[in-house]
Every structure is written in C-alpha cells, then in structure tokens.
Image 1 (cartoon, rainbow, N blue to C red):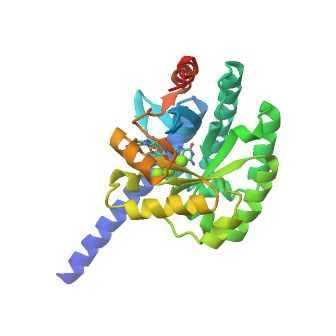
Image 2 (cartoon, rainbow, N blue to C red; image 1 turned 90 degrees about the vertical axis):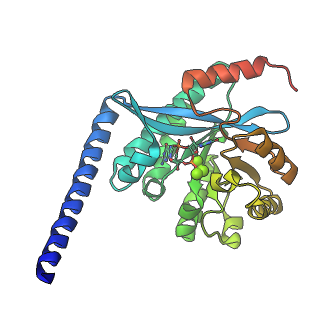
Length: 278
Ligand code: C2E
Ligand code: MG
Ligand code: MG
Ligand code: MG
C-alpha cells in the first residue's frame, strides 16, 4: 500500500515537473519568436507632480501583444529572467525608449523616462557598454534616461551595485529604487548609492491608513537623504490628498493615467503643454 502511494506520488511529481518544464520552454520559444515578430511594445506611464498636476517623467513598461492578447510583464519577465532572453527584452525596451525620447524632443515635450532594469541585466558585465553605445547612437541627453532597480536588486551585492551605479552615473544616468519598502535596505549603503528617487511600493498605497507609519518613514528617509519620493499605484483623489499632506510630492498611478502606447502618451504630453498652469 505505502509503496504504491509512494510510486503515485512520484508519478504526480514527475508529471508536474514535466508540465512546468514544458510550459517554460514553450514560453521561451514564444518570447524568441515574439521578439523577431515585433510582438513586444513599450507603454509609458506618467509620474506627476502633485502641486502642478503635470508630468515630471515617464516610466517605460513592456507589454507582449500575442495573438490579440496583451500579456503583462509579470507573466513573462520572470521566465525571460532565467535565460539570456531578458537581455534581448531589455535592449528592446532601451532602444524603444531612446527612439521615443527623440520623438518627444522633436515635438518639444521631452521629459525623462525611466526603464526597469532586471537583476540579471544589472549583473550583465556588458551592461554599461551597451548603455554607453545607446546613448551615443541615439544622441540621448543622459539626464533624460533613468534606471529603476528594485530595492532587493540594489541591496543584493552592495559592492557590485555601487561599482555599476557609479559607472552609469558617470555617463549621466539617474537611478530610482523601485518597490521601496518591500526589501531590506541598509540605510548606510543606500546613502552611498547615487540614487535620486525612492518609489514607494503600491502595496503600501493600496492600504494607506494601515501603512501610514511606513509611508511616513520612507518620506522622512527621502527628505533626510535629499531624494525625490514617488508613490506608486495611486488610484484615487483621496490617496493623492493624503500623500500630499504626508509630504510626498509626486505620484504615479491610474488616477492620472494608465500606461499608454507611445502615440497616446505623446498626445497626452502635447495636450498638457497646451493646458494653462493651474
Ligand atoms: P513596477 O516597475 O513596480 O511597475 C509598476 C506596475 O504597477 C506596472 O505594472 C504598472 O502598470 C502598475 N500600475 C501603475 N499604476 C497603477 C495603479 O494605479 N493601479 C494598478 N493596479 N497598477 C498600477 P506592469 O506594467 O504590469 O509591470 C509589472 C512589473 O513588471 C514592473 O513593476 C516591473 O518590475 C516589471 N517590468 C515592467 N516592464 C519591464 C521592463 O521593461 N523590464 C523589466 N526588467 N521589468 C519590467
Ligand atoms: Mg518600475
Ligand atoms: Mg514599482
Ligand atoms: Mg511594484
């Protein structure tokens, strides 16, 4: 009896493993094909200054349009991250962002754009050279290019992070720490990093009252270290006013805009430029 059960359990385990592996392979093949067939697109979401209600910068967010369906990065970035496919996705997003920067500049509405850099990409030894090459090729004013790395990535190997960040900072690139509050930061390490902005993770904003202590602490840290602070995932006027009262001056979220394709965001920026200041 016990023996048979053990055997069944093994069979089930092996079948799950097989399915998982199969799914992973299928996804990888799909991504490779999708990159060749231009199924990936970059959307942009504004970050907004509360005081002026104007866009201060954008965040580039990758999307996969596969057979009419929109696949969110949460579903494919982790798989791409397990292979060198993440390098190709990241290069694609950087190139698209640089090209879009040129368009914004031609239209007279250029704002900085931040790109999410995954842990594997951040640890790619060619990364700095790739970025340097892009800046030169697209003639980007590097102050208009920002990188977001998560708190966990930044704190994983502080010595390495400091080295790479400083090399990129020397090129003129700015840094944000993404999903701040979800990892474990050493404030001593953070203060040594050439970081400009802390982004408060959406999970805290979702339940502002319960997390008001944490949010206030992050805002206090940012003030102490003279960093910008951006609240992620702001969906309501109520959240906006509450954050403003707490001393957070910049927000990102559906309240102002969802991430939009480049042509829509360009229209958004042009409309904003023609709108009188409040
Ligand atoms: P993230 O960098 O923290 O991005 C914020 C996520 O919150 C985005 O999801 C955005 O669409 C979503 N969001 C913004 N405002 C609101 C809101 O008001 N309500 C709600 N419900 N959601 C909001 P998205 O685009 O699905 O991206 C998820 C994550 O995938 C990102 O988190 C980032 O870690 C990763 N990611 C996205 N694009 C890229 C990329 O180009 N490269 C890499 N390496 N990672 C990316
Ligand atoms: Mg981000
Ligand atoms: Mg985030
Ligand atoms: Mg997040």
